[in-house]
Image 1 (cartoon, rainbow, N blue to C red):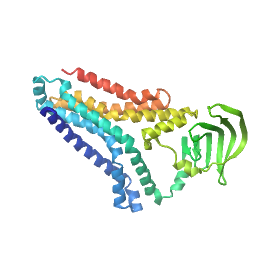
Image 2: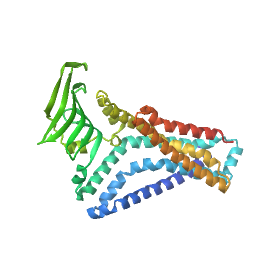
Image 3: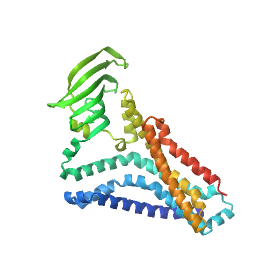
Image 4: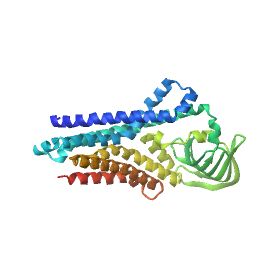
Length: 366
């Protein structure tokens, strides 16, 4: 590595880690104060708090790293520009790309690190968060609170190799609506499909209403005539509480787990659930690009900083651009889950647009 590259990298890294540490500390402090009353009432041990926040660091890191990268780029390159170091670099024959390549490589490596953490560490962190919140709420009558909650589009992989899809689930009424159950054999081939309008849990047994049962052969073709029952008692070991607490969250699954889960759902016909999960899956692949894109956004604005007034305006515009990037990404994800955009386009559109926008601005620099 050239001396100049080491100098640029050192300037960027020092600012990046300073911003990162500041953001991490602010996140923890704000989160503690938001839960302070519950923590004091629960008399939670300091070791339990420490364990939780250490385990939750990967989630916080992934959330704050892109903006830390943006601020590091703005500060380091802006300083080079203000101190006329950039002029010296350009006078020596270096192009904007040659000057920027060190931080672009850093952004790429940071994105790879975030991708790895999101797939391997974040599911563990989300499990730790769930356990912490359950422990924190144990002093409350949490069951009374949960009784009033309802879940829409619930999906769960249960015992006896069954896959459940429920349009509406009520823990208070111990009931379901819009039920689809898929039973698989040991090779994950579908052998039975049960569709019911509604179901209710009474005296330890699930009773389904207006229920149709389809049986499938080894080739996945329907065999025999479908069986219809106006009312049928089903032998399902899962209780309403288990349906409520064991529902699948894409954030708590790795890419491999989510792909396997999607494969199991592919024969269900639950198009809405499948579409949402596909958006979540593609988002796991593309969301790590945020750090690289934020750094790319910061480069052209940082290189415009010369005078104080221009520097402040460039700083403000770049931060606004980064904020718009987040907003546009959230909107595209929402459109994908609503079925307006294809899942892969919804997960990647904002990254492609803002990456193209940043490359265009860099190319226009003198």
